[in-house]
Image (cartoon, rainbow, N blue to C red; front, side):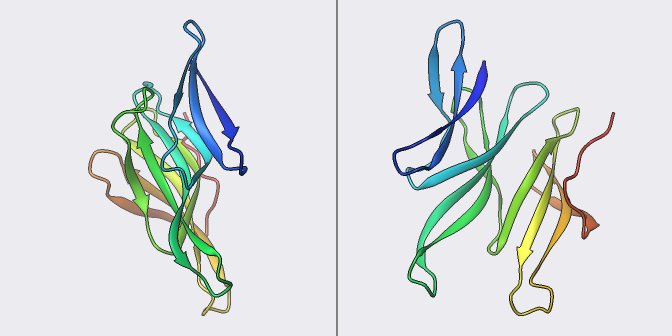
Length: 147
């Protein structure tokens, strides 16, 4: 099985899996107004974490539709999809699974236009079973589990 990101007619990216033996394709994408940016496959193959932007429907000062960055967990067959991470004003990147598949390490970026420094990265970890998150490093980016 392999991943592919496929652009839709309006350039939205969708994550799909392809079963090489059967040539069956499964779209793991969310709603039609979503774009998928990065993925991370759990070590045991049971889950796929997807960094996804979803249009919120609200309009910003420019009149353009706002997007919400989220991290979703999806089974490889497309079932049991659910939001793991979502916080207004935050975006996520550098998704990395712990070797036992119990935790997801990630970078969290928060934009704060009211502060002198408009945004900052922090490194967090999420417990896959409970959804609880915990800050590990303030001001860090691009985390990885080491053997």
